[in-house]
Image 1: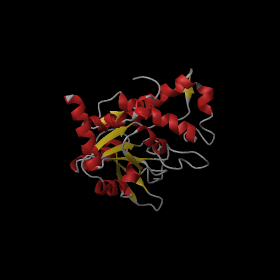
Image 2: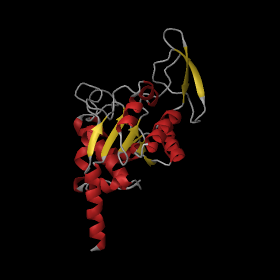
Image 3: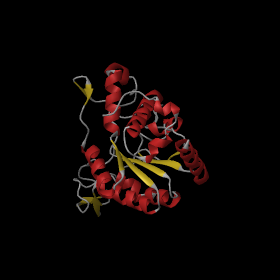
Image 4: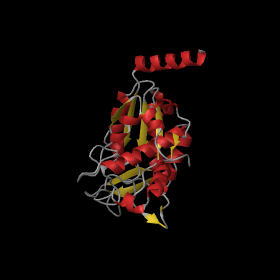
Length: 254
């Protein structure tokens, strides 16, 4: 009886404070995905949650460009205490060659590591590492009383011996940034890879008609389900806001 009372009280508090889930990421999460009929998984998360989901992901962004464009600042100014923020980057964060593309991060995972790159107009720019940009966003959100979760990037449609290939360095970098800040880490890469292996390569191939990165709406829903499974297998308080549909997503913990 007492347990039921606590659950009801928590539900009332949630409604009163109007908690929201915000998403920050790239095209694999964003509305419209990478175009041509693709879509991002963030558009399908809301059906599995009991809280409102606001998708602030933008195609083509990296941890650095999302920072430099002031999008993290806008998000930090928007959230209120108790809101959740899922941060997921990586697809656009790799090196761009001799001319900076405005998205690449400095190589490595050191918070103080920097690189000097050359812009297309010939000017020099000092850039930072992936963890630097993520950690700064996380700590600023935490200072507002928000609850950030750092999620690893999703896999591309790349296979070896019947399974998705091992993830790029940004999967580990995301975990590093989360551990340094005390944020919950969701290995979204591993949970999507698990889902894809269960479905099989031929089925998954149909989710990628445009390229090997951007999914159809059906594929995006599978990716959203994989995130929910990772959430249920983790320790974040956000898992208490997974609804009955979310409780039924397939596969197990990895």
